[in-house]
Length: 439
Image (cartoon, rainbow, N blue to C red; front, side, top):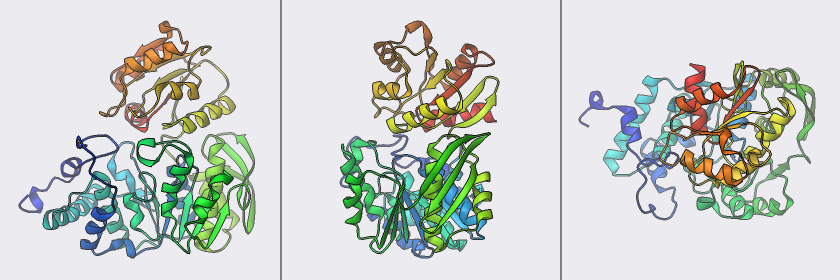
């Protein structure tokens, strides 16, 4: 790379280790987890992470939706808000946004070029996620955001985002996921996630398991507010096009709030988001701000309706807890009818556990299209089909597809016009399907 004109930003970014997709992963682990690489990048970029206050989020499920909700609330309050989320659905630009608008190609190229210069000059070997984190923080500092709402990539303690000193830490929930990195029990996973809680911060704790409380208290936050005790969602009921909930926080109550998203779990996410926004602002939010924010929030790929006849829903449920939440939402909002499922799983998932959580096996009356997520980390469709048969599903109602166009076509052929197609199991499956169905 001799000068700026020779630099190709996305190919350069994609040449780095990517834990999310498995691309470029070394045969052996890189050693103990560390924040050294991201710290070096940021130091030579001028320590941008010190230039803005932050709200830092971790949890097993609901992080991205909650980030979007917090962002909407704070934007409606007149703040300039950076948001950092992962993974993206269609374009890497989606991960980095200000006031809900993703970074444009020209600016992303400029930010990545700046990171590449640091990599070359100091010899650090960052990952794809570390590069994007550094680029995001540099942009937020350059644009003088009033606050950055930052989602962890994995866990908390050793996640690259954990170089920020957030005044408000948010834990959406804790359940079993990513055991190979975070631990095999909820206590071990909570321990890792608790690492984002800095001494003196406010912790918005969305997990209600009392056995985990001491783990988070040990991080010495100045204040802990807990869902269903200090804040929460009551009367979380189905409404046309979404949910209607009564929300309460430590200092306020908001009745009949419409949320333009599907699933009862979005009511809990809304309560967490509102508690986090109020903790950051330091005061209750006006009723009209809350109403506007939740009525306009969007979270693509999360129980998203992309077609009506047949009804096609996309949901990135990628672990057992997420699959169970999706199944409950479908039963409540979309009826107990035979469905055509398009499912693909990452290789670290237990296929049997995921199928059980989705309710697919003996007694399942719909059609399963076993698909393959477009990543080296994906389970083979034939393997998914075999496990479904082992679970008691008739083989004649199972199809396999190697590519997402094949899977979508098979589902459309199988589903009647008044039927339902649900595409899930991995955000990579959802992203590939969304590219076909939305554009």
